[in-house]
Image (cartoon, rainbow, N blue to C red; front, side, top):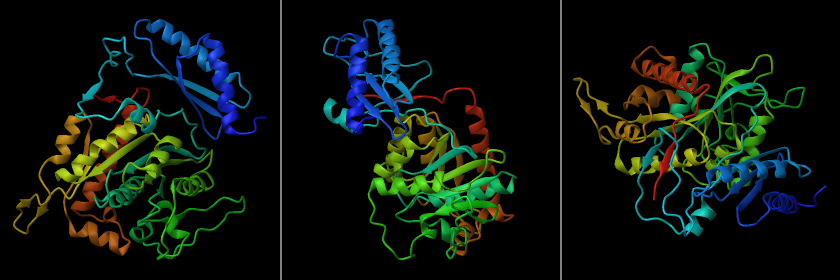
Length: 387
């Protein structure tokens, strides 16, 4: 048995270098808490078949080390000094140009390295994240009403409030005083309202208590609420778990994207340029962590006066333009409606009604399900952010 994770990484590194017969091809080795290894190898553009053989040998070598339960080797797309052309992108790739760039060393140290294939969670069929690269765009409102709309359509739906710094799900579901109970098998029982099972850090802490937590503490809480809760069973699984993620692309959001077996992500934005500038970061984070982006939801799209005239208070068509730029579906354009705000404040989501707001969220739910179904059996479109 290894004394530390560093010892195990060193053993995997040595085994791979021995299997390859020479050093220089192996860049990094990472091992998660379940013993799965992620290996990064340098690609040889002059001999791609040889690169593929090295990748296979590296995976076999990693699996030969005690304690390693799975291994995946990826090839870098970096250029060496002698390369004249980069590796060709996969067919159908969508390219997005960048301007100025950081140094190679900074990029290597800072960027996510992709994702090890994660095992599904027993009792949950599918998991999607609702995310935004900035706060205040209506991400929690979309999460709650999407969950309720799908429950209204007969789905078995769960909602996990991962926004530990500002948990608003209890208020929006009318569950400020909820007290989740521990079940006889030791698991946490989600609280149910409006046909949706939910868990939030807001159920477990004092309402005014500040959450002064770093990334590892956030992930520990999320892991407990995800894996140690009775969302569903093997014979009666939850159809869909929606995760309301923390805003931004920082440590908490990135860790969730890398360590939870997400089937897809929805990006929420408002139309104005200052919000759209952050959409790209959100799309990039999920793309680089191998999570399919299902599409974009634009909120606060316009305000309609009593005469029926639309006023684009926060800009016009920004979400649609971003969806077209990234070749992603525009899942919904949600106007400013008093009913949506009132529903969130009163704990009676707008999706429960029989008005325009309810119709909008019903269509959003249908679009999300159709997009998810469309990913079955085929890879999601790839987006490459170019230098």
